[in-house]
Image 1: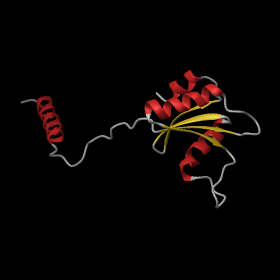
Image 2: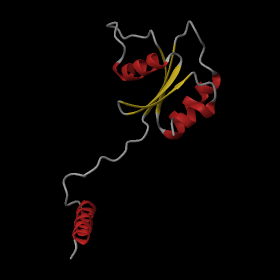
Image 3: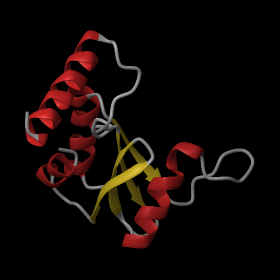
Image 4: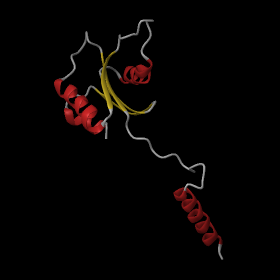
Length: 126
């Protein structure tokens, strides 16, 4: 038996163990899909385009993605940015407002500067 055959056998055994539930850990992390899309803007500088609002609504209804608007000056009762918006706000400020920040958990997947169409939002959240 060659080394290549041995390695192939080990890989097959690991795959079988994972499928049967006999392996406690997965040797790789499955990719996590988009979970959140936040349009961050400054209300004194711009209005949220209707097409963007419509697309965020579609993401909520059709894709079950938490899609929201966030005005960059919004704070909670303690004067802090709410935790669920901290990552999106930082990414949007780095890109320049307004911006759509798409996340998978706490990881920023992409940032789209100043989207204006439904297609731009839907493509960003793919």
